Image (cartoon, rainbow, N blue to C red; front, top):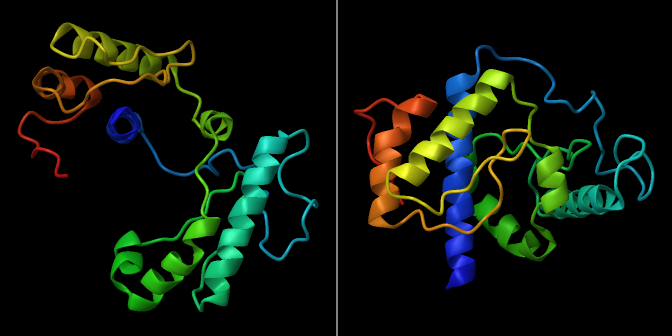
Length: 194
C-alpha cells in the first residue's frame, strides 16, 4: 500500500512538475542537454554509451534501454535508438496503446523494461531559472499551508524532493485547486482524470 502511494505521489508530482515546466517555459527548442550524442541500439556494449565521465548507473541504464529497443525491433516495431541519457522517444503514445502489434511487442519485451534510476532521473532534470525556483517554492509552501502538509519542499536547485505524500487526500485536492494558479493552471481547468 505504501509503495502504491509513493508511486501515485510520484505520478502526481511528475504531473505538477510538468505543468510547472509547461507554464514557465517561454520558448521551444534546444537539445535537452543531450549534447547531440545519441546512443545506438546497434552500438556494441561498452562503447560510446554516454558522455565521458558518465556514471556506471547511467551506462547500465542506457544499455538496458538498448536491449529493450532491440527487443521491440525484433518484434517488428520501428522503435528509435535511446539517446545518450537512455530516453526513448516513442512519439504518439496513443498509437502504442491501440496497435495490437505494439501491444504484443510491449508484452514480449516487458521484462527488459527498467525503471529510470533515481540518479539518472535527477541528472535529467532541467536547470531552473531563479524565477522558476521561486515559483516552485511558492507552490510547495501554498500546498503545505492549504491542506497538504506532507507536500515535498524543493531542493536547492528548485526541484521537488522525493518524499512520500498523499495526493488523494481531500486536503491535497483542496490545496491543488487553491494553488494551481501559481503554476499557471487556470481556475476553470478540468479536474485531472485517473
